[in-house]
Amino acid sequence: MFIGNWLRAPRDQMRTSPRQHTRPKESRSIRRAPLIAIALLGTILIAMFVRTFLHHGEELAVLRGHDGPVFALVFAEDGRLLVSAGQDREIKIWDVASRKLRASLTGHTAAIHGLAYQNGHSNMLASASDDGSVRLWRVAEPHEPILLHSGKAAMRAVAFAPDGSAIAAAGNESQIRLWNSADRQPIPSLSVQMRRSRSLIFTADSSTLISGGDDGQLQQWAWRTRQQGIALPAAKGRIHFVTLSADGGLMAAAASGSGVSIWRRGDATPQRCSAPRRAPARALAFSPDDSLLATGHEDGCLNVWQTSDFQLVKTFVGHHKAILAVTFSHDGTTIASAGSDATIRLWRSPGQAKSSQ
Image (cartoon, rainbow, N blue to C red; front, top):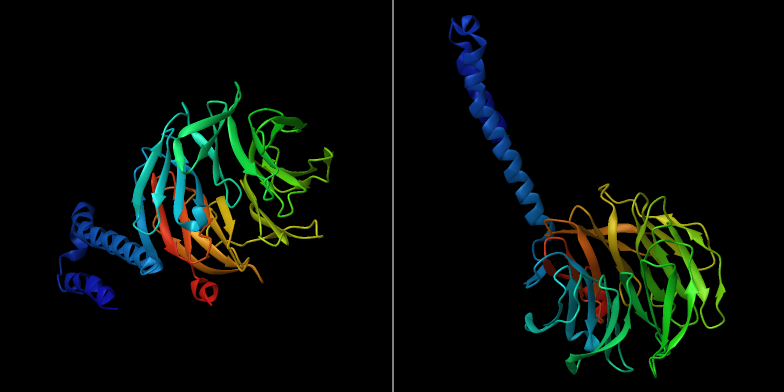
């Protein structure tokens, strides 16, 4: 109210001048210029306050080290490490407790879009790159990678079967490649009816492999028998990312043109999250206890939803460009996000209290 009264004061003063109505229009414009500037400044300050208020006390750290957009994130070593990769062709390993960079891994010659970590079996990290290669890295000896695959087509996604039996990778070719995890020998690939696969995930029992890509459909395979399941239409445009809840009861996909779609087990009709902003989602992740779903959007906002009714719980603001990767820590207390602004941000999860009980 103070600002409003203060802005009106000059107009009241102008009415006392008998010559006010005879002044040329240019004079009025000149007199209004300071008011317009003040109003614009006020709008900017209010926007800055809102952005600060939305994430105040929630942002834990900002990690900087990548030279370009960050496309992939994964927690490793039971959450003690955070691994990132992106446009700069480097894989970076961060110590979560100290927030310091532990190692930078080189070897890829193009952008890295896919990361996966096999926790509990071999503690192996896998990466997929636009250079057409898929590489394996032992976290204990990260500077000695194993070249699993090399080809002409860009590889954009990679996944480990939870039981440690297989590795899957896909990209700009009409197939999903598979390898036996034990001896790293190829398994007959799966043919896909899409030009580009962008995301891969195994179900919790490792029996089914799900992929999403540019055709806007989620394709399912019983990969051991090579039997394809029913394709679920998810979007009018491309699917950027697909993920499953830990118990396998929920599947979510981030797609251009359709926002975030969620399926419950046994129901082919998707439910959609009604985001307060129209910016499409590019990345998403379920919390370890499946109570929350985090979605990263092209406007740089990170939304967190409760999965019981998919109502918005919290919006975090900090990224200045699109969020391209999101993941929860193993204990569910921290959310990590990364994106086009070359930063990685750590946030205190809204479900921290529940997760720590």
